[in-house]
Image 1 (tube, helix red, strand yellow):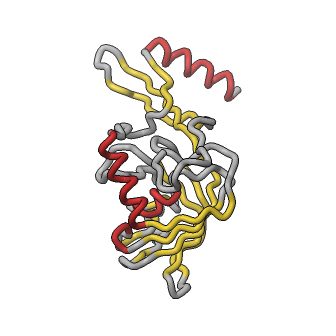
Image 2 (cartoon, rainbow, N blue to C red):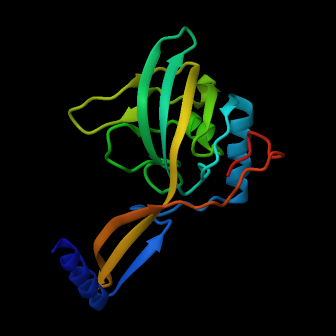
Length: 209
């Protein structure tokens, strides 16, 4: 019955004008210019120490993807700040340059150091990332559903043990109500794996994908 209702809904949306778009997410994708890439690679090279403990064989964590990872985040004295899973939409417009706009508990906050450290990992891989204070944003490490609290971090060196569990391209269903051309339905309907790009053994670890 539910399947039949879904088919009818899709047909109805088709009459109103709808599209299924990949790589858009619920927010506008940010274009990654050549200058942006140079600047982000410079930050990655100068303020992160990245050690690959295990190389994965799945899709890479890249710009314009939804990524998920299991993290242990601690200070250099061993104090654990956060241990658990995170979700992050990388490369979409919002209130900050790199912005994650989901409402899920365990959503990464504005931590560019962690984002850059995860970039280039393949699903199934494990990585140790040491982040200098310059790339640590004091405040919430993760955002969570209101009422459940979050993990705070101070502007200090962080050591992150990360295992990448997913990296996919968002697919959004958009339906337009004519003649206003306003989206009346804008809903995520999937997140698809992409095998490209691949990381070459000759790529420097600070390369941005």
